View 1 (cartoon, rainbow, N blue to C red):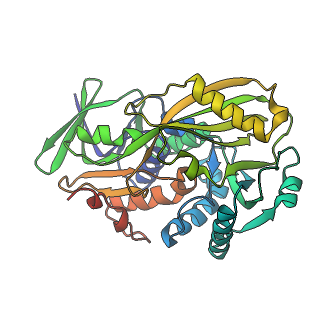
View 2 (view 1 turned 135 degrees about the horizontal axis):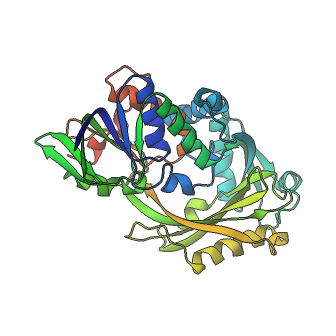
View 3 (view 1 turned 45 degrees about the horizontal axis):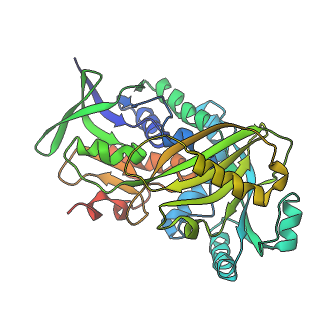
Length: 379
């Protein structure tokens, strides 16, 4: 059976759903195919942080974060569904003079860009987080970021896209792509063939595997991360906690732990993450990773020793060789668009997905996305 659409979006996470919403809102006939549940994959496994302070400091990234965070504060009204967004403090714990200097400079850049960030010494850090063991830390960088429920965030975009007549098919993995010369002519899923004028691949860590169905090789790599969530507890955290030396702890290592955590609106602690290299896309966990996260958490908050873990998960997390996202049309395949490798997805999605929708439809949009084109990896 062949069904025709203007655009087929492959991938039903935050990026695919938000882009499908904007495309449908602009009048395109949209089909979205998702291999698993709507909002599954890495979108369902994130900690819900709307990050503002830990990304790159180039003008484009800063503009995306500033505008995206602003849009998040009214997006529930636009989409017509709550996703539990709230503003929360972020404390990036600093344990060396080098990182203190680096974050002091970063704080200036962020503040000048409209993302207020300040440095707290050890005494101010202890006042900000009374239950935190601050002995190993010089202080912290402090900023206001956001938190939301990632499941509801995905479903808010999904429901809004459906109101604009988009068709969403969960549990519909794409198993074949038909290509003639420089164009994709159809995709196959669950024994059915679907045709469109344009095809969009937004599959996170699975992007490279899906593109290979079209004979396209693109370097979207991944590591495997593990996290867990606890029973609700009385308020223990006032802020989200992250580490200034996160990159140092995980870079180049086969296995590593870089603990970070926050407390959701119901009192549960969301604790991340144990990272390991793997060549397999999977969602498993292991005792080594979860024990490592727990150990590091208890060093910072000893009073949490008797808290119960109620759910743990693992997920592949994508990245590109230069750690910038890939956005654009695939060279040599004129109607195939790809987007992957975003580092602060929750915050950037409200803005970047709208720009990408305009780009896909051939309309004007306010930024230059050429530096993120897949042409930098495909000659």
